[in-house]
Amino acid sequence: MDIVTGLMIWAAEALTLAVLLWSRWLYERDAFYLSWGGGFALHGVGVALVALRGDIPDFVSIQIANTMVLAGIGFWIAGLQQFDGKRIDPFVAIPALIWIAGMFLYPIRESFANRTALGNGASMIGYGIMIAVLLRNESVSTTRRFLAASIGVQFLASGLIAIFAILHQTNSFSAAPKLSWLFFPAAFCFIASIMSGAKLLTERSEEKLKALAVTDPLTGVLNRRGLIDEFHGLIKADSVQKPMIALLHFDLDSFKQINDRCGHQAGDAVLVAFSRVGQTSLRGRGFFGRMGGEEFASILRVSDLVEAASIAEAIRLTLKRQIIETGDHRITVTVSAGISLMPAQSADLDTLLSAADRALYHAKESGRDRTAIDVGTEATIIPAIDRSGELDEQDLQSEMQANHQVAALKRLASLSKH
Image (cartoon, rainbow, N blue to C red; front, side, top):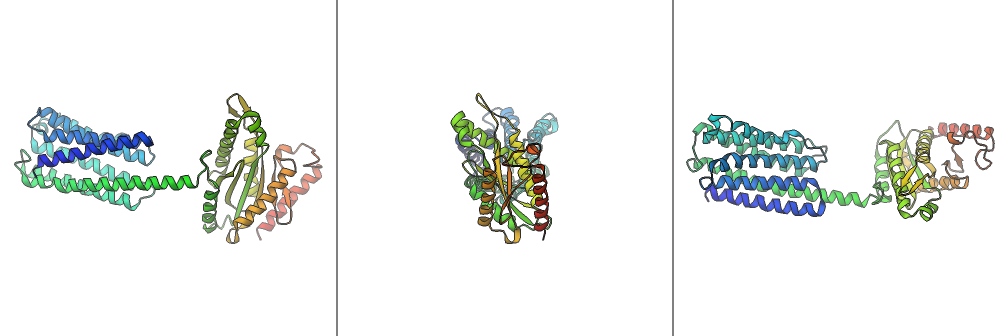
């Protein structure tokens, strides 16, 4: 098979992939499909124009064709960055810009050997950038390594073509059959790169499915299953400074009335707003999720009861002070919380859930909009700074009672350390 036939087959494969990737974009709307499709389209058209050398003007088959091929590599790099959720860096244009700059130099523009060396040298830089993007990801899978290795072979093949062209000062592909043979390993690795790229997409789809299985579709936080999975990870983690597992169980107060008065769309807005409050307040210290309906929970490692109570109160107070605007409604909502704790080494999720439920029930029965801690035999209401000046008979009989609860909380914190 001659080099022209090989190039046309290569171009046809690239254009077919471009169509397939753009079709995929119509369904999934991920930007990297557009970039990769654009890369293959430019690459395919550029390679086809190179193959038509002699049948079309030299300016088109040389300057324009190679610019398109190298711009295609830039689009592939951009797609990889989008695939990893990163912004597109300006360096994606380097391969094409190197070629364009070289075409302004007469010794390069008028010499087949020098043009071949320049084009393949620019390709090497593009392939090198692609390898760096693949291997600098936070999690480098076997598939990413294989793809990087395939691109690495293309990198080496381009380098050998450039060296061969300079050493032998060839004036055409047909005049250098050995040079033509160097295209075949590159073509083989091109196909291998496509296959490993497809595997990357498959793995990404599997990861998205796994994420959907543990994520609440409305709020985007973990669902019950996701929280259970994270609980098993937390108890295995080695943290001497935070030896306790805390489960914070939240229930939005009078949520049914919000739905009845303002509509279910407003109710959904409240659920989403509280999810944001919960995630933000944790600041990476634990995991927040929706148990179902208007019930939420957080699982985290803490040093003692005081830390758990502080986090629960921060979430409660933040929500209470927030105005949720949805449609014509401006909604304020409160939440009640129940807390349970166990040493991480002996933590049992069912026991924690039951204890947190008891504490939550006590918080609801004590007037809502408050936090309670289950201590085994009873539940204790956390003294709240937003009610420190009130003398509510259901909550705070007197300043003496508040002081008694503060003392009880401190005593419980000291006991939890033993």
